[in-house]
Image (tube, rainbow, N blue to C red; front, side, top):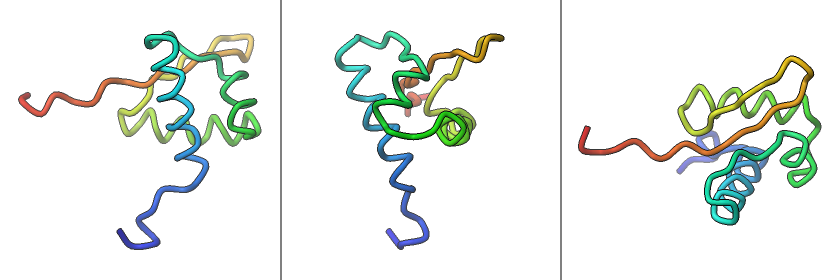
Length: 81
């Protein structure tokens, strides 16, 4: 993998934390506030990266009108489909 193809460290931190939380909670959505705290990313930065992960089909983000929200990893696509 070339340097320009590498994922940003923030994305790796987000995915790593989502995976760890998925294993701990059995797939229960993680609050954006908790993920922000665990990854030490500002909420605006976190939401920007999560938008990209959601567009890529890696995560599902739920945003509430009051500004709160949650995120969860999506299962990998089924290669047989």
